[in-house]
Length: 587
Image (tube, rainbow, N blue to C red; front, top):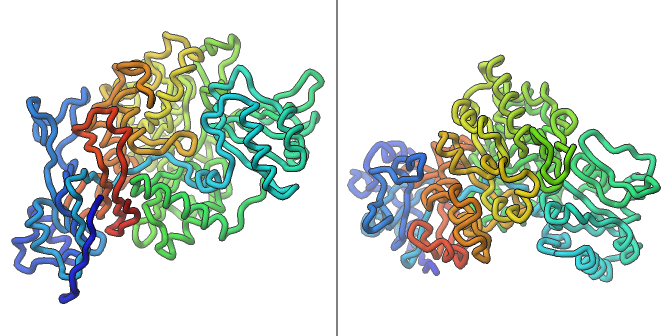
């Protein structure tokens, strides 16, 4: 692990104004007539700056990349030096030592790999913060096992208090959804709500249904379903746009509780090596919390907030206010998250043709799923990027049509790097439109390996040509960015990189990968969590690569993803995370 040292103080640090001049010079700062003094120096590492040109659409490294076909990849620096949160030197150990202040924090990386700070470009850290106190049902195979875990929590929870859980797989369980009977019998004295893995289904006991006011007379909302028994009574299972009926019954945390939840979740992300997140669908109380934390400079990593378009009052307030960046740039608000359709697992994704495993059903979308075209268009015209959740091929086509129509009608809405969140099943005829329109395909490599057991059953073999089709999108010239969609998927960067590069699950299945032609190269996978994340969040000037003048965001890990066998990635660990020059995690 890194070795830390601090030498005696003897000189004041050079002025930050030197940075602009340094950025115009070569990477070495030691030849400057007045050498700046670094306050943080990282030495003896395998540094990949990613400052060379992008790979080709087929993944082949650019001729200027530190790569050759005979020996493979090589790192292009061993040291970096930082002053007041900005990079002032990239190069050799001796060069970095030469500009270290006597009081500098010096880290010997011991030959470990240093990358630009990792970015998870689609997260729900607010849910992660809450889920850390919830019952984790991830990987639970049966209703009985899930109820047993809830009963164990109930045994140590005062009667009447809410018990919340998450993580049961709505895709894998879609043909055997649970109901309230066993849960109500085993846990009668606590209201219980159990969110599914990706949040498109929720399961409750009788007491929670009562507190939520869900009865046989309650109509299913547009785009949602309240499951009912033969007598018309709610079974305790709700889908898609009916999920908020249960969510809204749970009391909101207090402001101090929300702040604590967010900080706890962001620290978890720092431990995982991330220096930035794109928080998708920020609700008003969460936005207030982010602003409080930013005003105190307490955010441990950069938060790119995507406001929830499901709250029209919130969006209208921000349209009037306009895009915002906190003084240190650790909180940026210039994006809106909207939903066009549901999820594939719960058969809510909107399809052009019937689901292969449910004739006559094509999912839900548009206005029926709460998509407010006028609101989103007004946000785009006001200068906000929009990230629209679209999973089915019909949902993706309609989303592209919508973005195109707004951009044609309002020039101010152009060049905002609008995004399709998930872009999971796309009609082949629509793939090139991502490139021609400059729309970012915001995809989650873990979803492919997690959904492979049932995805083809939903859509049929023919539609798989455009499903989870990262290579096809890249070959068409579409901008890509990678993420976890946590907490529905594991947010480990090693899991994400492995999923992108192999399309195998953690057990190595299927050998060679699921639809292996869609695999990413090591460089593309790393860029998907670094430089491409910076681009998708308008941060390429300050982040995404390691260069003089940029923000000092670094992730140090025990494995070299450029050279390691992909399976070895799963054994990797993050040993150091640096965000804006501050060490936010060290192992």
